[in-house]
Image (cartoon, rainbow, N blue to C red; front, side, top):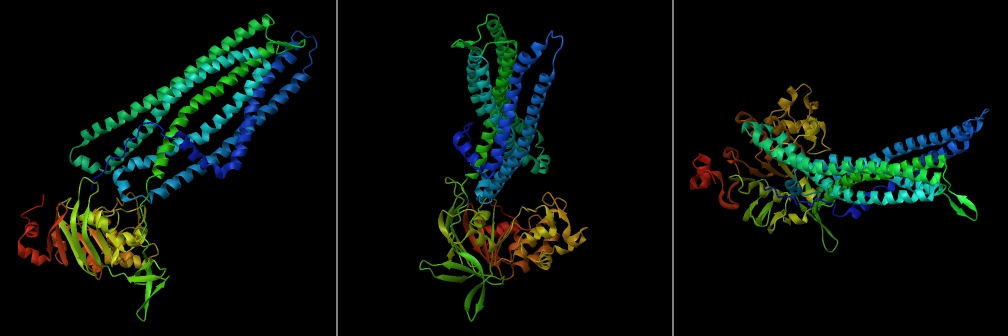
Length: 639
C-alpha cells in the first residue's frame, strides 16, 4: 500500500491568534487557581519594587544622618530592616505558592491535551497512519507537549510577573525622578525594537526546528524497527547518510533558532549596563547642579539625593531585568506556539467518517420472530431504522458480495479494476496473486478502512457504507501477517479480541488455535508478561496468539491475510487443524502465498494488477492449466 507524502509546512506559525485562543480554552477549569496565582505574582512583583524604594529611605533617612553622629540611635534603622524582612518573606512565600499552584495547572492542562490528542487519534482513518511516520506522531506527545509545559509553567508566570513589575517600577521611577525616567524610556524604545526584530525571526526558526525534529524522530523509529533488515542487507552506511541529512537539517534549524535566542540576552544585558552607567552619570550631574527636581508653587518635587540616585539605579535594574526576561521568554513562547499549532493540526485532522446507521445486535428467535436482547447470544442481526420510524432486523449470515469495485489509494493510480465476486455464508474464498495485485486492498475495503469509489460491497444485503463501522468490524475477525501484541499478559492479549471473555473462553480459543501447548510450557503460563510486541516469543508463537485472539472474538466472517506466512511448515500443519476449526461455519477470506493452504477453498480468485484473471475451485483451475496451475507448480510467477 503506498505511503502518501504529507503536506509540508511553510515553517511559521500560520495562525498565532487562533492558536493562543485555543490554548486559553484549556485554562477555563483553573480560573480560581489562576486568580490566586495572579495575586501571588502581583504580591511578589510589588515586594521586589518595595525593596528598591526602601533603599532611598534607608540611605537618606537613616544611614546618612548616622554618619559622624557621636550618639547614634539605631532604633529607627532596626524598625526599617524588620519591615524590609517582612516584605521579603511575603515575596518568598507568594513565589513558593505560585510555583506550586502552577504545577497543578500545568500538569492538568497537559493531561487534558494528551487525552484530547489520543482520543482524536483513535478516530483517524487508517489512511492517516499510512501518510504520517509514527515517530512524527509520537513527537506531538513528547517534544510538542514539553514545549507547552515550559511555556505554561515558566514563560506565562514570568511574563505576567514581568509586566506587573515593569508597570510598578515605571511609576516608582516616575515618582523618584522624571528626568531619569525619560532616559529610561529612550533606552526602552531601543530595546523593544531589538526584541521585535530578533524575536520575530526566531519564531519561524523554532517552528522549523519542531518540524525537523518530528521527521528525525520518525526516521529513528523506522530504523529501530528495521534493524534486522538493515544489517541483513548491509544498509548501515546508507542509513547513516540518510540520518546525517535529517540530523543536519534539524541541527541547522536548531542552530538558527537558538542563535537568534542566545544573541538577544547579551544584547539586552549590554544595553542595560549602558543604561546603568548613563543614569549614574546623568543623575550625578543633575544632583551636583541641583537640576533634578521639579518646582511647582515654590515646592520642589523629585529632588535628587544620594539615596534617590541609588534607589533609581536599583529600580532601573528591576526595570531592565523583566524586559530581558520577556525577550528571553519570547523564544520559549515561540517554540510552544509552534508545538501547539502542530498539536492542534493533529486534533483538526478529519476523523474517520462513520455515518452508517445499521448496527449489530444480539438477538433471539422466538417462534421465527427476531427479538433483540441485551445478553450475549450466539445469534446476531443487523438492526436498521427505516424512514417511517420502524425497525427491521436482518439476520447476520455472512453473505458478502463485491460488485464492480474500482478503487485507488490515490486518484491517479487505480489498484482494483471492476472487481466482482461473492461469498455465501460458510464459504471459504481465497485470493492469490503477486504482491501488489490488490489482495489486501479487497480486505481493507470490506473492513471499510477505505471506502470504495465506484461499485458496491454488500453484506447480508446491506451496503457496507450504511453499516456503522464499529459494528461492521465487530462482525469481522482478522488475522494479519504482521502480529501486534501489547504490553500485558498472554491472557490479556488474547482477551483483546473480546474484553468480556472469561478465562475459560480464552483457554478454549488458545486450544482451538493450538497455542495452549506452548503457553503452558512458559514459566508463568497464561500470566506470562509480554513486552515490546512479544519479543520473547518466536514469530510463529506470536502468530498463534493472534489467531487465538480472533478465535475468542467468535465473528461470523474471518479474514486471514497471510496468517500462516510466518509459521514454519511443521507448525503450519499444527495450526491448520485449528484454523479449519476456526473457519468451520464461517465465511472466510484467505490471502495466501502458500497455495497449499487454499486448496480446500470454495473459490480461488487469481488477481493480477487489480483485475480478476481466473476463478474457480482448485481442481478446476489445475485442470485449466492457466496462471493458477503455473503458480501452483512453481512454473510461473506473476509480475
